[in-house]
Image (cartoon, rainbow, N blue to C red):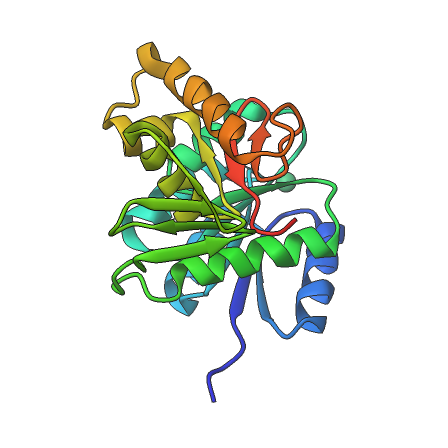
Length: 231
Ligand code: CA
């Protein structure tokens, strides 16, 4: 029997820590806690947790720099827990190697969904990516480069296909504009920042019932995009 997944909560707010601990334990996770940058780093290396929940504002340092340091030595999925309205911090955290972020205040349903996504993506990093992925009625065949939506074929251009491929392979995770540019165009320079927006608009036209109210390809305001895995 494999042990329950271990979540390390790095958070200095005692109330929030208590809430996270209780919620996670009642859903079958093991939980360890760190309250500072130093302790967070030490316990990550010591315990090898399956997921990190990382607060950005720690008393002895910035969670952003901790995410960067840990990413250099560990593949553990990092979910940043951040205060509302600090979009630049979230983008930076994601670009520095965090896998996702969740904004305070959040409910237990959202928290658990994010953790499940993070665990799924980290399950076996050495396994080859599947050649067919199906999410929320959208099916992509990467070998044949074919796409169907609710069994109906969808014709995509090369860039549209490549952009959608990145999103579906990271279904449920937020991806920054910089990450999408890098993945699809091999260039994260701001000069091409409009590419993502333009191609996202055309993808929505082809895939969404109402492109002005997307239910699959969601905008994360000020950050990037997320393909929503369930409707
Ligand atoms: Ca804090």
